[in-house]
Length: 393
Image (cartoon, one colour):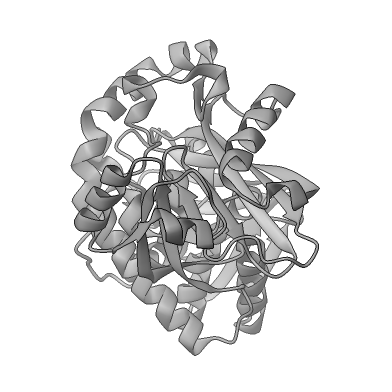
């Protein structure tokens, strides 16, 4: 059976991976010619335990607003354009906690299988620590997440100051997202997946079936189609009359050279700010921050970058030793209830959508790919109803 996957980020690639591994003839099409944009511009934390209770999340966008000098920002234009989406987010996001955690734990198990079965170099680091300025919050997090409490002394040993406690999750981990992206590409080629990069594709068809995908004026046909285009999913769906409530949030990643010094002992999430700080190897440190609704604008002002660096420098004891290497902007495809949309598009027999993972694309990618493959195989999963594309109708 032939399957065309639209979208070459981590969601599309894990979908293609499970399909190709199970005997499907897969073609992967991506509009980007090189990197995976959102897939490589993120923190690289695989932490389902933190997924439902972050200090910075969709539900907080309306309930607490920090403005331009904090982690969360909504431009007035995006506020007016998406007011119904934001109001729905405030009502529904807390209901998703159980599903998000269970789906994330499935993904964690699938990651373990993937790393055990495949020879990949992704700078895998076991054990993630969430740190807090308030020790009582840290103790409560350790209790809720069934993790180990980390005191101020141990936080200092990890390379951080001014933080009174934290929680360590020994079974969760981090990866270098750029390396994960590259290794997935390599595995797909080994599985004889046809990969088309730098190609704009458009779905062609009407209820009840997609007929083809148009690429450079050529009609490509398959038995099944998978739409995993991240923040561009909504635009792809216009031609077929489906409107998934996915809007783009953006984040910033900054990379630094540590001059060969180990400045961070474990992958860390600064929970008060929603900022991951990870040293992938002996020389490279990565900082990720912000949850902003500003459309597809990739420009971060100098003041925003200064806020991020000052916040990290306030707590990272070795911050003065960092040398800036580069930065990138990643888009997060967000739904109102913070759950991804995975399933057959209403009315279509041969089109599966897999998008809307917001901050958790890397975390949830294997579970999503597994679910996509199961749907195409005609098998059910426990999450089918909760993640169904038709739940917003």
